[in-house]
Every structure is written in C-alpha cells, then in structure tokens.
Image (cartoon, rainbow, N blue to C red; front, side, top):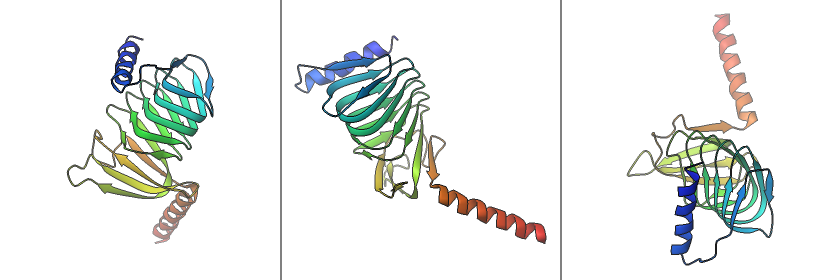
Amino acid sequence: MMHKIPITILLLSMLAISGQVHATIVEFNQDGLIKKGDEYDFVSVFDDATVGMTGGVVEHLHADDSSTFILFDGDIGWLVASDSSKMYVYGGSIEHSLIVDRRSTVSLFGGTIGQNLTIPNFGKVNIYGYGFEWKPSESSGRNGSLSGYWLVGTPFIIPLRDLPEPFPGSQIVLIPEPSTLLLLALGCLMLKKRNHSR
C-alpha cells in the first residue's frame, strides 16, 4: 500500500505541471467498467479487482496487487502493470507507453502501442500473432521494434525500449497463431517418424 501513495503524488504532480489543474482520479478496489463517454486523468486498479475498458479515455492507468485489467477499446495515454497484476489487450490505443513491471504479465492480442513498450523489472509480455519481425535499433540491442500481424490479420508495430535483456529474451514471449503451431508440430512428427524408420 505504501508504494501507491508516492505514485499517485508523482502522477498528480505531472498533471499539475502539464497545466491541468483538475484531476479526475478513480480507484477500483472492486470489479468495474470504463465505457464510452468516460474520461479520467488517473485510474488505479487494486487488490483482486477486475476492470474492463470498452471505450472512453484514460490518461494514466495503473494496475497493482493481483488485479486484472482488460482493454477492449478506448484510448489510454500511459498504461502501467506492476506487482502481480495481469492485463489483456484486445484492442484500443495506448498513446505513449505500456510499462510492464514487478512480476506482472501482459498478454497482447490486438490494439496499438504508440511510443514504446518497456519492461523494467521482471515483468512478462505474451504477444499473440504471426509473421513476427524484430528490427533492432542501431544504437542498442535492447531497443528496437517488433512488427507482425495480430491473430485477426491486422498488422502491428510495437516499439520496444530499455529491455532488461537483448531481444528476444525470457520476458517477451512470441506466441504464433494456432495453425503455425500445428504445422510446426506436424513437421516435428514427420522428422521424428523419418528418423525412427532409419
């Protein structure tokens, strides 16, 4: 609970510096929904609450503890997962950053990430899609961009920054579409059968 107060103060300070004198703060300790027409400056999801977002606008959303956040649609400026929280992103837009920290897990199935995906400490990201292509930055193997297609066929580009280890690493898992997995399994079975018959 102690780390939540400094984060809230920091984010309120950032809002004040940016010229916004009114801040709409919402805290979810129980299940909830953010929907079309909702607009919040700062949203916190705590405890074991599950919060879905089907529309609306949130400038900063922070999930802590063992909470779950599910993004179907809507716009978020900064999205932060920490502690043991889980996030599922099926659509929507993350304008600035997705930060995955402290044992949290984020599963990406769709949507857009504007400026970067960062994994500072022990977080994990599962990316579901196909046609993955990693393009490292010229300056560092810990920065670059990942492109490919979501399972529904929509192309994506995810800028990755300040990864804790060179890409690909243990903290980003690329999960291909089921048909790719099936072809890979069939190929392995054929090789095994071929080697066994010799």
